[in-house]
Structure formats: C-alpha cells, structure tokens
Length: 193
Image (cartoon, rainbow, N blue to C red; front, side, top):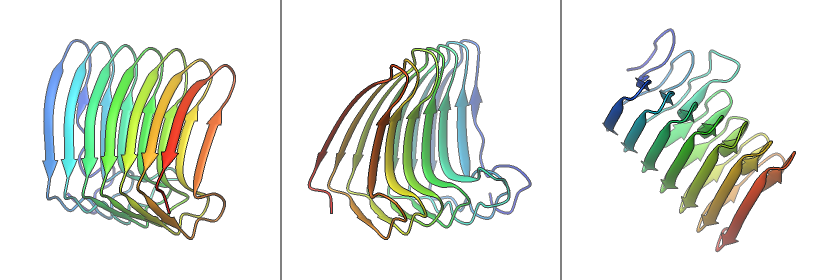
C-alpha cells in the first residue's frame, strides 16, 4: 500500500462499531498523507496491533505521518505499535492524538524512527480526553525538533511511561513534555540514552 494519493491504509470506526485490527508486514511508504492512519469516533472501540511494517517517506501533505492513531468523540483505541520502521516522514514518525472524551491506551515499543520534525508524539488535545502511553525500547534519530513528545493540552489527561529508548540527533530536545491550559500530565522517564 504505497505511493497512494492519500493514505496507505486507513481504517475508520464510528458510531458503535467494534474493530479488531492486525496490520503486519506491510510496505506503507511514499503516500501523500499517512502510511497508516486509524480514526475512531462515536462510541466505537478499536483494538489494533501494528507490527513489522515499513512506513517511510510519506511526505506529500504538510502533516504527513508514518503511523497515526486518532481517537475522537467518546471512542476508545487500545493499540500496540511495535517493530516498525518509520523513516523520513514529512512531520512525525509515530503519532497518537485524542480529543473530546475519547480514551487511548497504547504501547509503542521496539520501533526505529528516523527524521521528520518529531519522532514519537503522544498528544491529548481537547476536551477531557485521556491518553495512556508506554514508550519503550525505541531508537529515535535525527528528528528536526523533538525525539519523543508527551503533551497534555487543555483539560486532557495524559500518562507517559518513557524508558529504555535511544534518542540521538534531535534538533531541540530528545524528550519533551508539556502540560498546557489545565492539562493533567503524569510522566516518568528511566534508562533512556
């Protein structure tokens, strides 16, 4: 699923849908937007395992991303993103985004992320959304801005457990955490290099 005018793979769950996904051993490169983007809305639930994929050189759109999970409405995403290569994407290698009252729980582990503006980015953006992320044992290199970002915006609640990662060559900070406008952020860091 490469060299497409939009995304390589784009599952979308809305209303009361329940979706179990395994995305394994795909080439999701050279797309205009994202290599893979999973969107949820309504009260839908997605359980996703994304492993052993190449999501590289997705650069057409201003916000092109290798792998993206976006939870909105009152939906829920439970995800594992592991053993993927996300190289030289336009903006972010691996990105998770929650808004409204959505809930996202994700483990991001053993990935190789290189280039782009940001390596790995976990964002709680609007409403009272929640995000719980374990970010471990990833190799993140040469991000133009931040290697790993954990960000609670507005009244969102974000938990980030960041450990065992190797982060080099970032233009700004290797690890960046931010809480803004009543955001509730709980972050821990250990054994990162």
